[in-house]
Amino acid sequence: MNGIKEKTGMIFDIQRFSVHDGPGIRTIVFFKGCPLRCDWCCNPESQVFTKQLMVIQKNCIHCGMCAPICPHGAISYTPEVTIDRDKCTNCGKCTDVCFSEALTMTGQEMTVGELITELKKDEVHYRKSNGGITLSGGEALSQPEMATALLAACKEQGWHTAIETTGYAKREVLEKLLPFTDLVLLDIKHLNSVKHQKYIGKPNELILKAAQVIAEFPGVELVIRIPVIPEFNDSPEEIAAIALIAKQLQATRINLLPYHPYGSNKYGHLDMTYLAADIDTPSTSKMTILQELVEGIGVPCKIGG
Ligand code: SF4
Ligand code: SF4
Image (cartoon, rainbow, N blue to C red; front, side, top):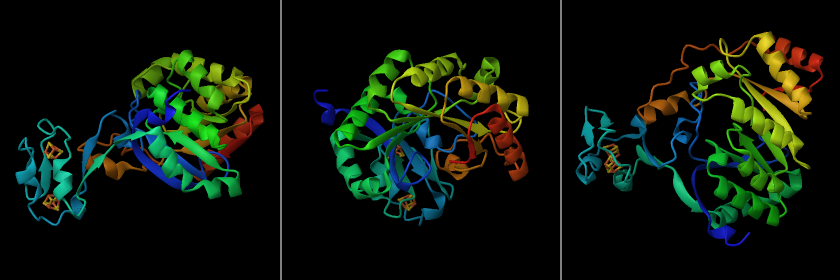
């Protein structure tokens, strides 16, 4: 691939020393932007494709530096620092004067070359632990050229590559990216497309087709992940239906991810509402029953990860 180092993408985080997103010690690159809208999303800052201003009230020291800087008059004090999101263009000028980091921008345009420089800092850990790089999000497949270029550049370095994905991508996108991918951690959340549309904002047909494409692609390991969400997909029948598909796809295993309100505090930072606040975390005994059910169908199963 020519010029892959210059390809750019919108990235919102780089997380080092992860041990849950593929084998060994890994660095996770989080892509900004996602076509789905799960109420329980633990990264609300990942949903839109552009930069966003985040406000962390507890960091504010009420110095009054930010409001006069804003070219659009979007900042007021009530006495908390308050952003008029209709006026804010996410220009970031206020973050330059907020030294207490109450105001920060999420999202940064980065090149593949810049990312490889960052990722190389942890190379010794990948090598010692048989780890590598995992692309996450958001949805990395929604920035397909950048995701493909980054995976190709990682492969040039000899690193193991993984992608965590919703699978909401066309065959053409997958066929370009999978030659540079060792492992796909694919979310399958529900087999009923109507329910999928209602709770997640999109039907599931594209995702199920993607699962088939990944499963048939030579040399790529497939792991299915199911976020277990009470009242959405936590019945034995719903989990068993996904397990049967995983078996047919010859997935290496299923990871059952119990709902947890991770990231709920970040919704306030973006003036968003966390819609999953009333959901209870599934009990350990419930998760164990579901794990045994999946294993009984013939698919290795792990809780978490
Ligand atoms: S990001 Fe720009 S437009 Fe938005 S509040 Fe800050 S200075 Fe104003
Ligand atoms: S610049 Fe930062 S610390 Fe100062 S008032 Fe604005 S948000 Fe608060």
